[in-house]
Length: 471
RNA sequence: GGCCUCGUGGCGGAGUGGUUACGCAGCGGAUUGCAAAUCCGUGUACUCCGGUUCAAUUCCGGACGAGGCCUCCA
Image (tube, rainbow, N blue to C red; front, top):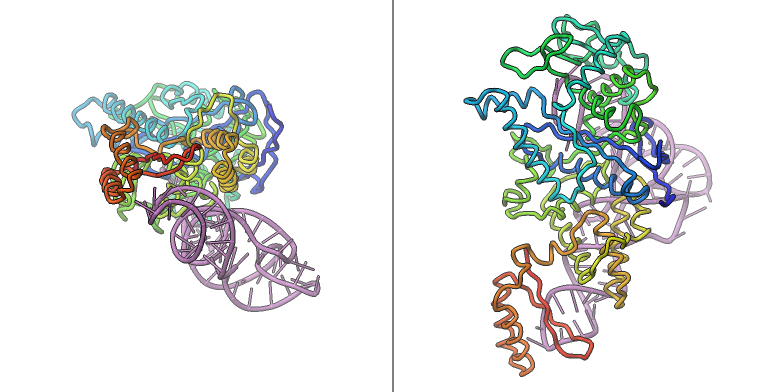
């Protein structure tokens, strides 16, 4: 285990802080995962990539077996119910819901894997943790932080003196700006639902407060406690979750447990725009991960997962991203350069990334500075015949979650196309006979098939040809 | 209205109280039969207005602009 100093920006204090784990033998992080009612969009993808990068960094610093990463799957939600009714009107509700959540969750796993994300240590589902949620709600009621009224159990924000610390807002501010009609049954307009009653045609679980379903925030409080404990190291998610979601998670967890904190560090990734505009379905610039991977909807072509990954990471995780075709093209060029420079290395499990790369990442996930370090290593790898630089570059790319040859040949081209070897041999023969027209004819013919030929001289000074498949 | 971020060259994006990355694209050169790949070299910048300072892109204040949140959206 190294002692590399790690610093992370903490939303709670709005400063970058030195990170000190509660237990260096088990560093614990939680990220709010998807609500599985629809395919994940690229904004969801950014969140997955950012926290995957953090996970990888922690594993590198503290050891792969000393980090626990929990990313939940929210599979109880009114949007899911609505989707189930819409898409499967003929099925019983429970079955329809299962169809929606299973299908969407499976697609999510596929998507984030394509983006180069490691599997989290645990991916709990909300519906497997209903009892834990009810226990938390029970504790909140018992401690006087929640009350039952009009078929709902509500959290009482006024029962918590420092409610609003994370988002930096106080209850008066909220009231001043609130244009929402105050629900009459709420003691304070900012009180939020922990449990709500379900109608017969809505999914529900029996509870001390009647058959119902959980509110939005309680699931993360329950699942993080179950897998990470009452106090853990890092909690993350998208910027929009600061309020109300994370604020309310903190309120629930701390008040239920009587603790001073829920997680020590709160991290939030920035949003993205698409071609300069807010991503929205009505503007027609809304893209799912699967769409980018498998269709030509964005820029008229498919985009490999690790190009998307680099395109996201090119910008610091807290900054907004303008997601554009040009950005992806640059990401592709750059990644291909790295892959070319690292080409031909057989990596072993023990090959470690370069220190400079890890060090830059350790400074609040400074991926961009790490990428500059990669450039330096790549230059070195290209310059001398230094195998060590090549190996180091390859190990660094692997560490960062990138493939080593994904852009050098596509899957289907990986197997050498038939006749290619013969064509190359023919061309070499023509070249040696100085029949350049014939040689160029063969080269152009192959180019049309998406195969680029590159000539070089081997150590003996003989002309050789290698090839690369384009896209 | 309240609360947060943020404004660097064609683009992406670091960084610094004075010497000013790096990458993409462009341009020039080496190499090549010609290419590709690779290497070497190279131009353009710090939103505006005040203030502090010997000196500000960097610190402070203001303006303008962009983005996010303010009850279920990553």
